[in-house]
Image (tube, rainbow, N blue to C red):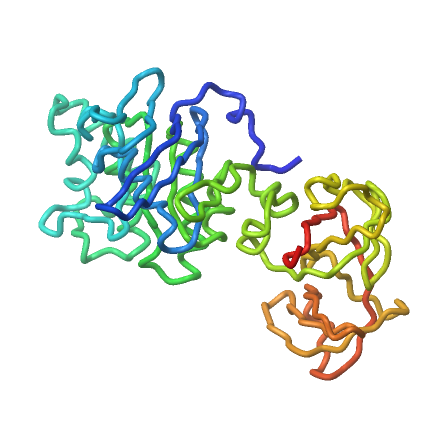
Length: 367
């Protein structure tokens, strides 16, 4: 079972988005967006630029009206056509892309900004609690320009968590940070959110951030969610070609469908749960039906003893591993992730075999 399939997925939904539509003038950006996020979970809207994910977040926050559908927090409808609860009434915290810290305020004052209505003793206790949670106790009297980008990120997170919001929204929160810091912080932020007990939803175009942080991810395209699922299922059980192409890496090979559990590709016969004939666009499996099979880099194993060989046409060094692009006898290409001590030259032929746990099949594109 995926480590991300936590018990929170069985909890009642805190956030429900039902058939949401939104447009800027004649440009429709959201086209029937629907998903639900359990209380205590971290969700993510993941997709390319222009897919509508930030607009969805703004609708949830109350910054944009909706044309159709509705948004519920708990049992309360907060957005619907002609109805929009003001952002300050929604008990939502938000971490913006640029952090939006107040440069003239100290770290302590930035974190406590949303606590102005609380009694001084309560405000001080909450500040100390959050400073310890995000690891900023030694930096409370510094100003934003005196701390690192990663520390600024944690200040913004602590400020959003300070009023104990029902829901935390994060809009591309790591986009202004370098890649190494981004990866480390995404894990830290996940731990902080979990420790705070908050429910959160993240918007990003970076699948590494999404996989590091989220329990449940919605892949967005053209204003709709293509698949809302665990990271494990998105990678191993994509519901369509867009999800398969967007999540991870891989290559498609043509296959002959032998029966409902077996397909034959250039590299051999694969067994598993093959989508039924209707999904593949044919009438009866085993009568000349064809499919396209997705092979991930971890499906293709380097094995010097294997009778099948492929030519190295490209290699990308990744530290502990090398991602090889390999040309098969037919001229088609596959990817293989190989421990980096197997350092093969371009043009070299290496032995490969398949180790496929999940057969991912789609109807051929030209059908």
